[in-house]
Image (cartoon, rainbow, N blue to C red; front, side, top):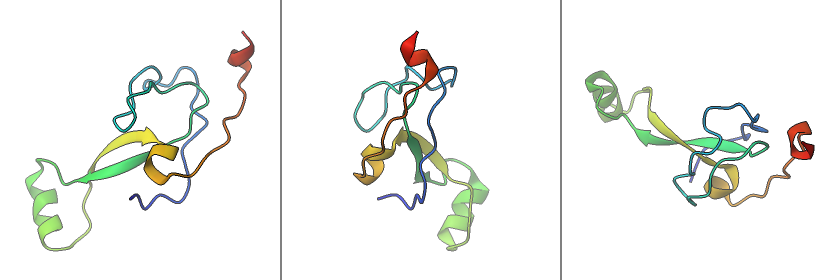
Length: 85
């Protein structure tokens, strides 16, 4: 479960992740999608690992997923001008 309050989006057509697969559902990200980040943990950073072990805040490694994949909540996809192109 994610601690996300709000989704990111709508994703613009020129966003670098458009076309990449969502790690949760394997469907590609599209322009207009709403996404969020899922924290995985401290990764290989020794300082972040130490802070995590101590229960202190740290910068986590995260992956982008569709907001619906992370929360089960539906987000209305807005129609973008490029949808009509």
